[in-house]
Amino acid sequence: MTTNTGGVSRIAYLLSQYPAISHTFFLNEVLALRSRGFAIETASVNSIYPPAGGFPAAEMQEAARTFYIKATPRPAILGILIKTVLTRPGVIVRGLSGALRLRPGDIPGTGYALFYLLEAILLGDWMRRKGCGHLHIHFGGSVATVGMLTSIAWEIPYSLTIHGPEEFYDVGPSLLEQKLRLATFVTCISHFCRSQLLKISPVAGWPKFHICRLGVQTDIFVPARASAAELAPLHIVNVGRLHPAKGQMVLLNSFRELHRRGLPVRLSIVGDGDGREALRDFINRNELEDSVTLHGSLSHPATRELLGTADLFVLPSFAEGVPVALMEAMSMEIACISTYVAGIPELIDSPDEGILVPASSVQALTDAMDLLLTDHARRRMIASAGRRKVLSSYDLSANIQHLIGVFEQHGLAGNRASETPGVSSIQ
Image 1 (spheres, rainbow, N blue to C red):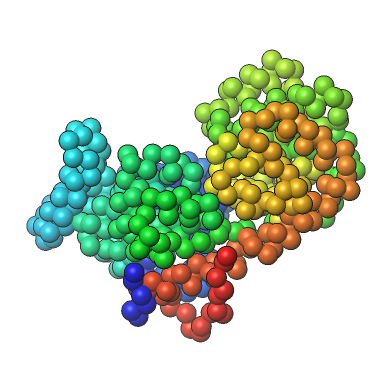
Image 2 (image 1 turned 60 degrees about the horizontal axis):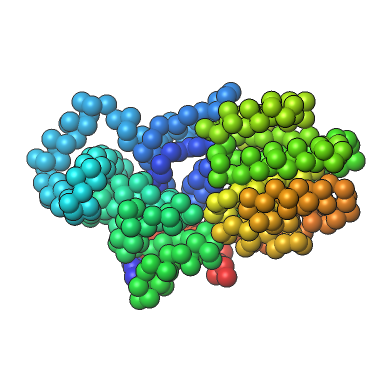
């Protein structure tokens, strides 16, 4: 395990796409670390796709200073390759050796590995020019493959933040075990996440797996001053990528049942994705157009404004890490319903801080929504408990302090004029 040796002062963050409308925690983490004196440079494998109306100013500023690997012009790629071959042949030798060992005997897999190596060479060259001595990677999929090959080729240490659950599905093909073994340290967003990594790692390596929870800006995601609780129809909000794994089709089936029971209720779904047409078709076939709105992707301020009108936030996901969307709603004192999936029970102690139901159960979800929509006192009690939970365990500022403690433990230091307050371990 690496210990503090004086500190690497400049860190490169590698993400699959940055900034991204659905992953605000990337931006918040980077900005919070910079505000505490850490020199963070950002690289993104893929280019960005702004939502309708564009990104807010902070995201546009980040985009302007981010290195987009796949957007590198071909003449520049050729120049970097030639320069690296001539001046740093060891990078090429180590990189090729590492790439060819990833999937021996798998011709298509080796082809992909060589493409990832090309991206790794571009990334390492950019890191060298920026003076970055450490690489930190969010997620353990193909973006981590690029990061791992960058480390092998350029002999730059790297670390990982693992979210789940996608990383846990195909640990063999995704080379997750090797990525974990070569990483200097790994941060896990939940106990569930850490348990899945310990399962595939030797016991001797367990100490390098740290729990570092995500968090939200509790001073921004605050309870709405004017409550919509006494108005009819009551308002349910769902925020998430439109994908079967997010369970929006289960939500629509439950919402249809609420209508059949005669409850005055409307539903807003925020987000976009390849599941949009199926949801729209269901809404049209069941004549729910007057009570269900598909808003598409909204800016963060617009989403927060919509949340301010919600009586209930529902996220019936089939697969999740620990959803930031749930934290944001809880921070705004909105009663939440979600599912017993992965790290969600660590965020919501059901039924006191929210209600959790079995994933895919239309009946259970319908009954839970009916219960909270018709019991205002219980809804408010749960909403208040939810905000207290976020304040105590998922406040961004406090959790960034814990992340800084982990960084410093492994030799990554900020250029702070004064010492930051001590951090306590998150258990």
